[in-house]
Length: 288
Image (cartoon, rainbow, N blue to C red; front, top):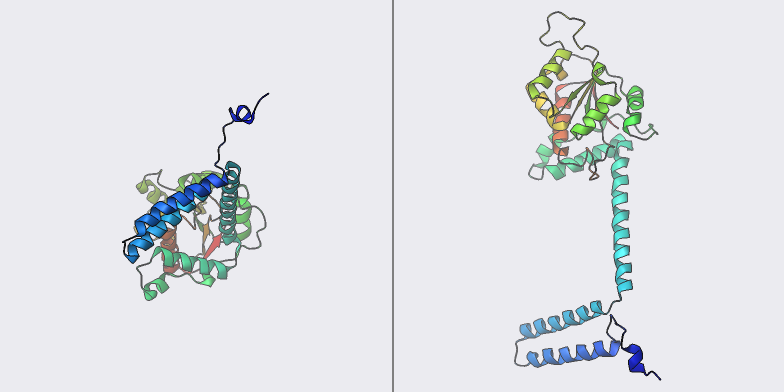
């Protein structure tokens, strides 16, 4: 006949029983309390805190593996929900009203320029009237529908399109018909070549128009950093009385869920917008 010892001999328990845990706690408490004698009030408080932490550690050890797994699962669920919420918030900004977009930019400008005075910040803020609403566009704001969006909302003869990365600039360039309609202006090109191409489109150094002059180019697709350098080097975008649209490719998320409005180049983006709006009239900013 087998006895209880035989039955339990090969079982590996991964927990301690409650009585054993309680006995261990009492033993630790006795050791700690012995050390409390002949100590100051501050030292006594420190000892009591150590005892409390020791008991909390024992409580943690006594949590079953199943409960730990459940706790970790809930944590990951909350984290995933937060990420999904943040993504939806970022995607909602381009679909917002001009008032809401203006408030968003004001907050972003303050966050990116903490050392500026209220007066200096006020000079950088954008106005509600600077933006043209695109709330009515109800299709997915992806690269496939970008041409539809541009046809529906951009009416100016020239248009600056700002996107957050070189890869995205190339995607939009192809989506809008390539070189017959667009110039892609980014770090993969030599800056002097980009500058020459832009000025050629505006006939800056061309005395006689020829069929080879890219007059048909409407879209100047660039990253904020490249456009900032171009605006410092030439005034062609500010010349004439023709309208100028600025399209912000704000719905695109990179692999890290950054957008044009929330990335390392957002500060540069705000400067570009302010520069163009200060130096040229009849400019409207549209968010895609």
